[in-house]
Length: 222
Image 1 (cartoon, helix red, strand yellow):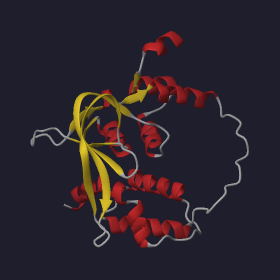
Image 2 (cartoon, one colour):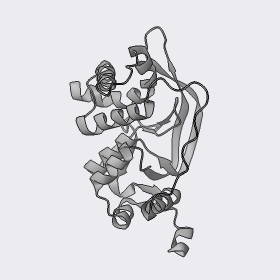
Image 3 (tube, one colour):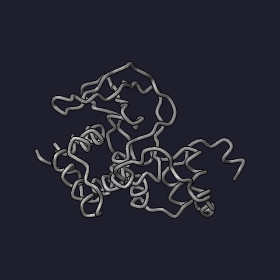
């Protein structure tokens, strides 16, 4: 196995399912909860990169381009795209996973093709993710007690909030509007007995994420 891993850099969905006993739904849920990073191989893929900028006056988010790149190799995809492809067998990617506050938009150069078409067979994980899953399966490591944090503590549990956002999108469906999403998250905080963030704070936190899901909301309302 070690010799095989030395040269193998990509493991397809069938490999992952067989090795770890996971169904397509299992992998979709894991991707949604940030427990599985799905990738696809590309060659000569032209993308526009940049940052998101919010219009303070209107609360809208705009792309601020910083240039173009040509990608070769394995690229990270959004959890929603991974879920869609796992469930439907194929899907069209218009963007790729990027660092918070940034974006990677796929440029096809052809108005008849909105993005990169990917089939389920092209989904998989990289070697590092495969090894992480194997280590996780071997058993949890004993962790030292967390050290007390210094400085100002966060007012809200944003990690839990992002998990609720993922649960809502993948199990209840994309909300009909950004306002509906914000109201749902405020209600969730209240149900948990936690301090409820104001609307403007949630707008800022989920501006970039909503940009990804907005097209699905528009399709549902059309």
